Length: 481
Image 1: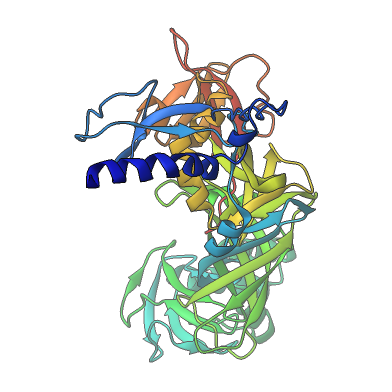
Image 2: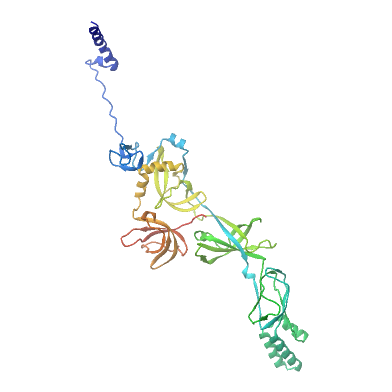
């Protein structure tokens, strides 16, 4: 009895439940057809991957070879063309992502280097003996003593000069003008200094001693004389250096040497002294093969004698680049072994890797030679997050494949170049797995080497061929210290 009542109640409520689930069910057969279900398109699958090993991509579903789990699909973003990716703007704001515009401007090239003060070798005096002599008296002096002009240094006796003076005076007393002139000429040729000759003619007596005096103010750099010494005709008596001016010897990295030229003013900072300026006098012709530097000589005035040879200094120079170039923040550059990339910020929150050719770098700005246009926007902060995601999606690899796969680059130093090719001391060609070394490269036809000189720092591109690695592109490289 109870069971039959329960069944009856269920049958009574069944129509009501059907109507509640589908309001149109009760109107079937009254001419109102049900609307068709909307078809939803499936998103395109880019590849399959293991979330624990996302850098490895697979063409289809299956089990992961790395973890005990199924592969999961990576779907394309709406409107994705395979070369860019989209990130929701709210997410980029939370990541602190910033973009910067590609601008046209001139790099503020800054140069800094170490320097050492040295003697002004153009104003050094070397006193040398002119005939065989004996040192009769030496003044109490030592190396590095300060000297005044005309200060007495030593007294010598030269027997050869004594005999020649006696002969001249004897002929002068005889009044034979011709013989007297010949004797006077022999005195001059014997090496007697002008002051002794004048004393002989003026006083009419033999000058027994030759007094050595300092011809200038300065420092006694070399002092070998001792009383009682015997001197040969070519012996060094003293070497005296001037301190009115000092030389500033600057060690400039080879890749920055072409920034400098004679006449430029360097800012000089010496320990404990006020900043000074020194004018570049010359870029010396010989480079330091060990330190890879070029020596630059500048001159500093030293009126108070505070500057001493051997002191160290720091020098700097700032100048503007000659021609405007496209510039981006240095933080926006993603450096690679074979090529450099930036992330272009496009409309609708899309980001696209773009290969660029980098020029000079100064401070926080980088010169772009190829790959960008003024007004484009590049990611300058938090790009490592987009870079990581782009790497997982294969965008960076795809951007790299757009170039020449047989082209490889490295930094190098030019040893020399001639009709046989380029001798380079190069760094590693990472894309070739080739370590740095010194070797000769052939140069492909059409490559311009007119502005390439020995010692230049360059970046070279070589093409991998069955019979060698010819250089197909070369560009001077400028690096800030």
